Image 1 (tube, one colour):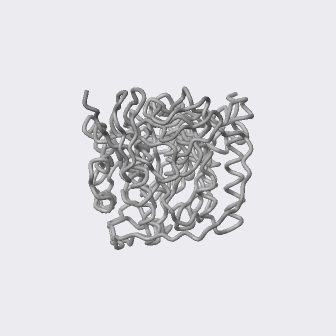
Image 2: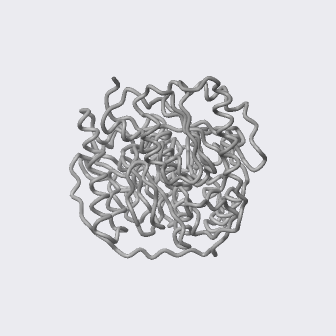
Image 3: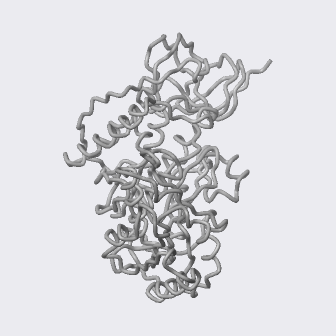
Length: 494
């Protein structure tokens, strides 16, 4: 029987595993670009790992040039490497070292401009919307039923209700997290005006929001228990906000753009195609003075050193270490291990350990300077890469990016997800199969990298798409009218 040969990918020369591009059968030959080839010993699914050398039990397994765990048993060259023979080496303790090396960021592409909405605060939006923010979940449905009846003037792109399940029966840090997120969202550059709606008897009283939004340029408030006519109360205030939100697009440089990066429903191709591609875009954006927001703090466990090496200021380094340790203590306080992150879909797609997932996820941040570390709901103040407080959960983390000022999100996915927050989300498929199967969810096919397309050509296409969206082109989530928020929960419910 003739042996079949299939392409594999080794990400670093020191890696002891490679990733399969196609499903392999016993006896097939895995071929790498550098001329190395090896017969495989068993069936190996597409996107999964194959050992390139004999690996002894308890020996570190190397991918991305870093350990992604240790072997549970002896592994032969050509074996499938996954959950049955590889385990995490993560623990609670992380010996943090400040290992700064000045980043050398280059890009072959010139700066571009876009037509944005410049706000009195100095922030720039790419949409001109009115956002309705309930202070409590009890009024979510009445707002979702009434607000769509409002006829906004032509200069308002959309009126959104930012429904959420909290605002009452919360205490301490949990209450503060909700307040920080909602007030942060109110300052997002895509909001031309904000209507804060209270019910009246909830913990999160309107007065708390008024304190946080005292310097907002276009905000109105109402408490429905005090109103005799809900429609008149809401619509009259929306009319005022629309009048105050009559902005027009003007030319803005790349440095005015604030982009969030996120991965969800990842597979092993995420770290080969979409995430590195987004990382190149991040380098492009920050090279030209723009701001890149990244989060999913638990998906940095095991990859911390790749970020600390890019932190120039000691204060930023200390705050980053504190944020990493906060999340580890958060898990252990609930008697949970810090490493139980890869989801069933991640594992089915070829990701085995949290170290592996993290090292792939942080590629979205590129190689530029990590300029700042932001608390939950804290707005960016520095250009460059900013690390934002949030867990890895998709709704919570994408919302945290918007609350810290992202007006657009680049969202990579290998399994597929329709979820998007209240800012435009460019969904980037890691493989062509997903892109073709779920075209209504996707905006860009990163899987073209596996089909021989040049990296710079694909990056140029992604840059063009980002600026087209910034100029008003709808993303898939906007076309489907998808846009929600998710808030971080940390505490009891009364």
